[in-house]
Every structure is written in C-alpha cells, then in structure tokens.
Image 1 (cartoon, rainbow, N blue to C red):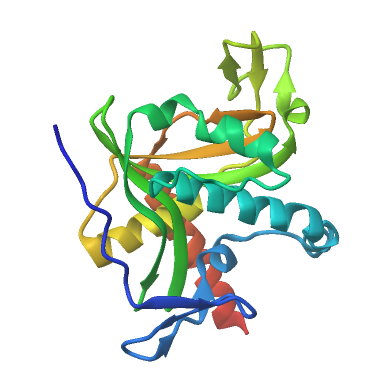
Image 2: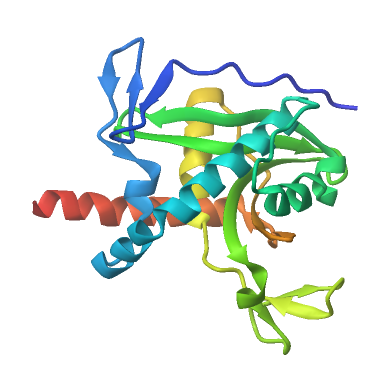
Length: 230
C-alpha cells in the first residue's frame, strides 16, 4: 500500500486585501491569480457576485476550512452555522479511501507571474490514482436537479434524478496541474470538482488531466492577448 506525506509548502504567501501572491524568498510578486486568468465574467455578473458576497464568502471560507481540518486529522471541527454544508461533504464516500497529499497549497508559475491555491490533492486508494480536487460551495441543490435525462447530466441514484453541474472548472484545475508539474514534478492522474450544497454533496464525473491542461493553456493565451491590447 502506498503512503504519502504532505507536500512541503512553498515560500508563497497571499495578500488577502489584494489577492496577490508573493514568493517570500525571491521577493517576487505574482502579477496575476489563477482566478483572474480564468474568469470570463461580464461586468453585470461581477456586480451580482459582489452583491451577495456576504452570503457566499463566509460560507465558502468556513466549508473550505472544515475540509482542510478533516484532511489534516482534526477531531474537533467547528462548522459554525454551515453544518448543513459541511456534514455531507465530510461524510462523502470519497474520503473513506482518500489519503491527502496537499491541502490549501499555494503555488506559482514564475514565468507567467501567476499565483494560485489548490484545495486538495491526494491519493485515491480505491482507484489507485492521484486526484486533484477543487471544492465549490453553493446554496440549494434543487436549482441544479432535473427530472429528465439530458446530455451532460449526471444521474444521482439516491434521488433517481439528474444533476447539472453549475459550470466547468477545467481551466482552474489545469492551472494547478501546471503548478504541480513545475514545483513538485507531480502530474495528477485525474481531476475532480466536489460541490457542497446545503444538505447534499456531489462529486462530478472525472475531469481528464489533459483536458484541464488544454483548457488552462487556452485561457492563458486568451488572457495574455488581452493584456497585450492594453
């Protein structure tokens, strides 16, 4: 049986006020974040997100912190008012056969001046794969549940219903794949996104590593072209 130790943290820190990353050894600031490069939101969408920040931000931060504590072996996890999100997440079947390798790990791509933070990397002892996982939190899952089967929907056996993934995270995960390659010489076998809703947690279908890498490269080229215009 394989055993893994947590990856050694890099000398990367983040300024929370500016959401910028700094290499404390080289004193080099990263000009961009993974989120910034991957975002294609309209101004209207950005305004709408900002409007509800007081709802999604504390929820997201708390749920991420709880998953981090579980992966690091804490037996005393403070879920606060987000128990309905945290409990289904922490009890998900995946984590009965998952050995963490990195949790909330900050990294960078120095030549692109991009900094970012992955949520979770670990070894799936059931499938014998290294999985790179991104965690997303949402409100009520009923908005994404469908009664009839359509292309692209995932069947939920426990509900006998179908689930529509809110959006794709290939670009974001592809960035972390590149960062892991550069900084640790590690290539995940597969990527996933786990969605923590109020009262339910859903793991999406596997996202092939190569597909994520391609999505990231396309996102970077598009972002870089925009910078050159200005």
